[in-house]
Length: 238
Ligand SMILES: *Cc1c(COP(=O)(O)O)cnc(C)c1O
Image (cartoon, rainbow, N blue to C red; front, side, top):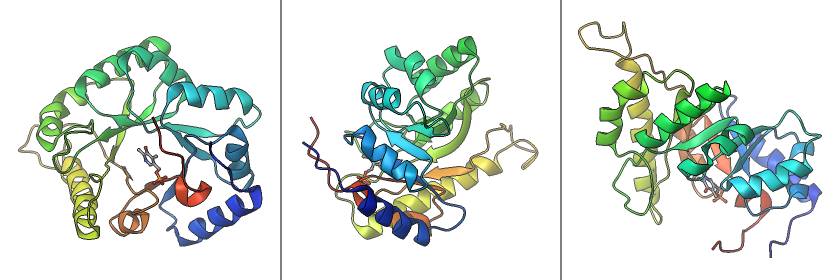
């Protein structure tokens, strides 16, 4: 069972983090495994962006938080294709857009529902077999088709260093993600007339968790996703 911190200590931890953030970096409070009371405590401390990994768990909490109408909900965990419609009903952002197949289905459902979720392409900057996400080669190959989707708004990259990465490896991964975003943006229409362009613009870099957010911020993260440093350790999942 999760033993939750008091609202006062949550507010204090949030204030400490906020004081370290550049104006361009948005704090996403990751409340997976935490009860709705913890979401409410963070909300009362000024947080408006919340990240959840599991759809069902998020929906249960949202039902208890309907009075907090100005929360932006971010899905940060893998999305199964049979849950796309529910995800679109319950999240404004999808950080875990991890395959072209998912993108196709998501765009189709978004069109049918008349919604336009913000999406980050989840990319593996180094091979990491246990994780989902685009490899660099997959992402390059997918760009022309990603460019043609009409409803999903592809505005960011999300990356997670492999478990156990050193500080140096983590820094290299975050820097490479920033460079990748720049290179995608440089291939846009009109930027290099000789090349066949696209119109995707990557404005956001969703990278950095409790253990590595300072490295991510230094590398240019615009969204950090923090759970345990705000709310205490989670029990092991599974
Ligand atoms: C759980 C999770 C986080 C938050 O992790 P902490 O180490 O508790 O800050 C961030 N991003 C993703 C994708 C997660 O699954």
